[in-house]
Image: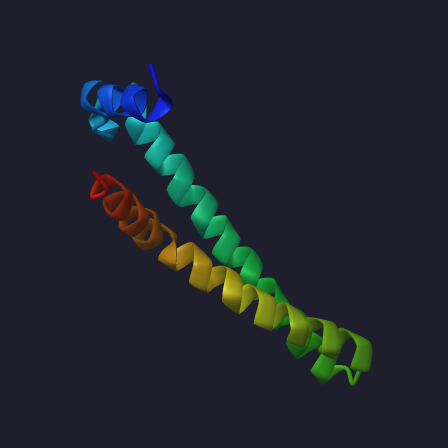
Length: 98
């Protein structure tokens, strides 16, 4: 039996329908995910605090490090906010492949 024929046979047999209601403790996992996202966003604010403190105290090194942290944390906040939409988009795109 060739590999493409086997793959075609299995494609009709295997199916998946992700659902959070089928998972025990799904509300706990959702709360954990929400909490981790919140802490990640709070951590992204620490760069702004370092930049402000460095600028206020005329400390060039702290100000530069804080400025870099603001750029990185801005990108991290963008990724955190876009993650659910990106995952759903990729899943729907993959689900549409037949």
